[in-house]
Length: 411
Image (cartoon, rainbow, N blue to C red; front, top):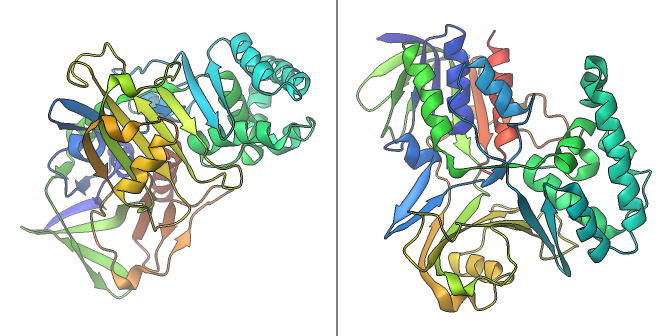
């Protein structure tokens, strides 16, 4: 029976990042996925001329000292350099704001949509700029900004509920927490940095992470729909795949968040409302700040994303419950921001993540590891050498951080 230091079962983005980091540290790793390829698990979906990405389409983390940048630097990966978006839109129940790389243009948008809040918003951005300049001059100040609360800073400004919803929607999408629960360094990133565009999901990143594992003598097994774990006393002793068993010192079960849902639509381009950007974050109801969706459209002139005269639309939904609506309801929710959408749909595909492995009943006693203010993703089980990571495709920054915590735990 072959022996590995770590086995990762059902890998998603976080599991693959953990495998690469462990391999870089000299650990012998085996990882498995039910998918036929990494592109199938993390990359694009193609059907009848349309090309879609699982998402998210936008993410922070590639800025200096960002989560993804630190990961790539540590693994000596230089081939990935996504571009920052010029603008994206935030749609609230009664207004729409374009967030631009030009801060003055964003302020003009806020002046138009939030006239009563504008003086406070103008002071807010001015104070953020001063703080950013101060932090850039010293490492200690930059370090402390990671622990300073954004909430204490925001309390100095008498923002209306509507303007707070504008910031909260972006914070929930990019960091999975409302703006007041961010660290001050995250608030600076949110308000002063444009996010990066993932036009093909994380497919390229996944390929590079896999290459790190393979170069270090690790193994990635595809089309492994399930894996059984054998236990001896309070430890997992081996993993049974379809064709063989292997021993592993530690095991990470990597399972997707079942609350995620993604709707892929192929649509005729004339249904896109005038003035609608390629990327829109949409909050339908002020009273339900955690139930929102993000819409991304392929550019009109992008070759290969859709047949002529068509556009690929990806809508990702964030829910607070496991009871997600059916495809028809998801399409109706998307139509709230795109009137007459149903009459112009030529292709419809729903994507919901499927767990790569079943969780043994003996592992149901889960203890979150370093949850902080975020919803925990990494758990220690009742068995000494078995961990569980719950991944959301809509939380890439938190996923990579959870992977780092797992790697640190095994040192």
